[in-house]
Amino acid sequence: MNLQQLRYVRETVRRKLNLTDAARALHTSQPGVSKQIREFEEELGVDIFERHGRRFVSLTPPGQELIGIIDRILLEIDNLRRVGENYAAGDSGRLTIATTHTQARYALPRVIAAFREHYPKVRLSLQQGNPSAVARWVLSGEADIGIATESLDHFDDLVALPAYTWTHSVVVPPDHPLAREKALTLEAIAAYPVVTYSKEFTGRSHIDGAFADRGLSPDIVLTAIDSDVIKTYVELGLGVGIIASVAFDPERDRQLKCFGASGLFPINTTRVAVRRGAYLRDFTFAFIESFAPELLRERVLEAMADRQMTDPTSPQ
Image (cartoon, rainbow, N blue to C red; front, top):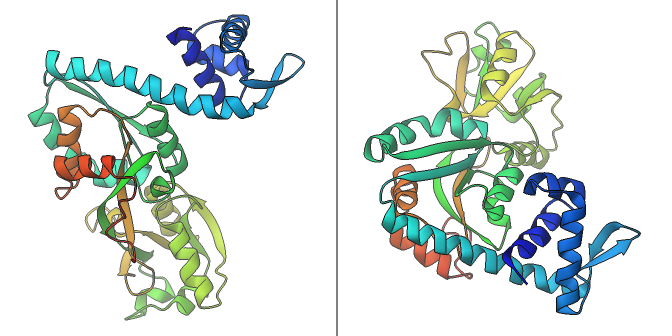
């Protein structure tokens, strides 16, 4: 039994049992992965994977138990490395942040600029994707921190803490009929085509829920993951835009009129997530606190230790 075998099993599960993809991610050959897994199974005396010919089709019952143990072993191995780096390397290293476009474009620039002033030796990497991908990258160890509004609080092995709350805004061209309204209603918005976020992004579920609660079915003619794309098509007259309030810049967006929509759509909560059980470098805690000042090191550590801790923003 060796660590290489454990990594091969874990990567095969991560790659949805596709040995070719697992071998590519591990920079080795498919036969090599298959051989190492078979030798590991022989040593254990049980099969980890159900097979159909040479193809893996599912985890066996013992495999389902073993994968959790393998994940914990490899996490602790990684923690050993991080502890050593924390004391030997000090304020140098790499920090990977997984997030959505809206957070990367509007919420993070100020934070990253301030962080770089205090930790110039830390190399930062931003990975952008939808909230589910953000969660997956943190769970797999490919990212140290996840920042998103959706999905992060849906995983037991993630500690997802509220960072800040925000609302949506409605944007239209200055010559749009709605631009003359003093106060918008959902009914008024639904009378026109709508341009807004894709299903998984930036509070879209709250947008859909607000219309549904009023029995309305807006004509959503275009969806995007990027607030700037939404605003561009609103400027072209494609429809009424619904965006995150932080994404509207009065100086840059002079071709649009903006309405606050806090009374129309529910408040959204952006969360910071880390993997439960992971050892966090000192500068990781510093970055989290810079992004969300209430998330002090002690609070993050307390949450990581307590699986039953509830989100303070949730109804009790």
